[in-house]
Length: 283
Image (tube, rainbow, N blue to C red; front, side, top):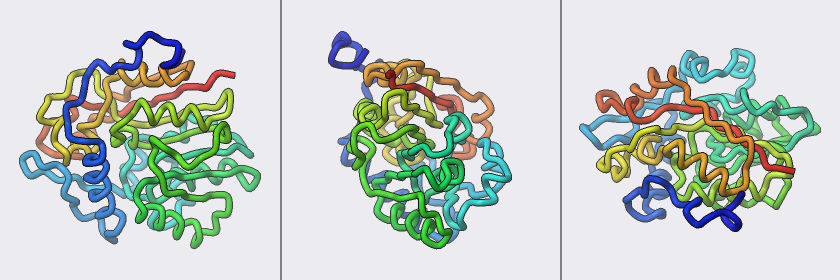
């Protein structure tokens, strides 16, 4: 089922997010992550305006282990690729094979793209998409200095990706969809670029309760991966309306332990949780 054949109500989310324009959200997100990628230190970056809390990128190995990354995966990551911004390990559930073409939506400095590049091998290919020029520059520099020749990074928005139709075997994404204002369009784009029987494997934050209006409208909490979290039912609907099948959304209760550190003192772990999200484009 997709939005062309489904009832009109199919593509209307349960919660209408009352916030500023999409462009304003993108600009706030862009400014925040430019500060992160252009800093050589993991110093606190202004993020959560409520009560003056801040978001601190966590590049600690123990944090990466909590997200599901193995020591072997981390051992082969170029220096500077891990900005400590994820909420899971999408490659862990993607079942990626040698020779496949993988797209990383919101690739940042290339962390997950480089992990996947070792899996697909020289006969495979990895494409990273990010809307922030500084992130793309950083990722390209990391690829050059590490000798990765099967990875490329492109500047673009997830809602309008510079990727040809039906050229991708697997799409991964790590804590990025929540930052996208138009999530329905993002999943429509993902469906467009996937080959028939292509797979989607996403780690992201979701919610099963209505997030308070003041949080939804706090622009700083958008860039902190909180305000843009999608209701699980709405997320499933977006995927279904785009045409995906075999949709699975599996919340990870243990993620609340590290989410509470994203904005200490706000109790945001009561509203959002990390989840593994998988789906398939039918043949």
